[in-house]
Length: 58
Image (cartoon, rainbow, N blue to C red):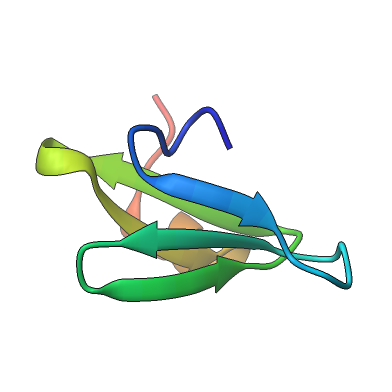
């Protein structure tokens, strides 16, 4: 949750996801998903497979 600051975030009621509140609305992140933060504190959420297809580890 520190990673997405200054955006607000909290653990969901069922405690199995994190909800992130963005200027465009709220979204949730499930375990095993990857959160990428870019300029302007914009976030993108990927499955592990999608992340590996888009990004290359150096």
